[in-house]
Image (tube, rainbow, N blue to C red; front, side):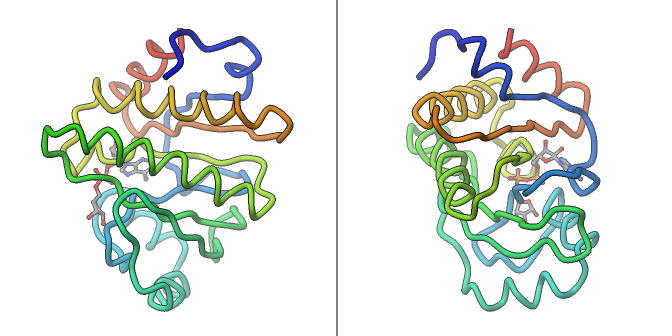
Length: 176
Ligand code: AR6
């Protein structure tokens, strides 16, 4: 994990507060569940905004394992693609951190194979799934920073889309 984030990498990362469904970038990430058939939180918001065609495509994907990622079109959203990843339900075991890091890494890998150059993440697992924000934030930021560093030849911009001020503050503190 990165100790300090190099300036070049910091420039590729943006922290914003708002509704991820309103963003205009290549791709947004959904914090889904293993069924990929919708739910509450950011998942519910994305399905409502993207429209019923999203659920129809999700039905063809036959779910997703925790830590893995699958891709769909963006339908009524501004984005071309939605990457659906399934965060861990917080259990307090070391497995949580491994699976949470996998979500970010696998989403970025999948994005690269689709020629995606800007991607927005919500704070995966920190809502319904109960992952403490202070523990989840460094995993999110360090995993993304490490990925960007090891793919220095690929142009990728990452947006951390924080729904509330507390989440935004946690990300900004980690980025400093
Ligand atoms: N834009 C950005 N972030 C949002 C939005 C939004 N529109 N709405 C909520 N958040 P959660 P999880 C934030 O619960 O913990 C669903 O039912 C929220 O404030 O959406 O990974 C799924 O189907 C929090 O910071 O996802 C699963 O069953 C973050 O998104 C389960 O919840 C994640 O909260 C997944 O739980």
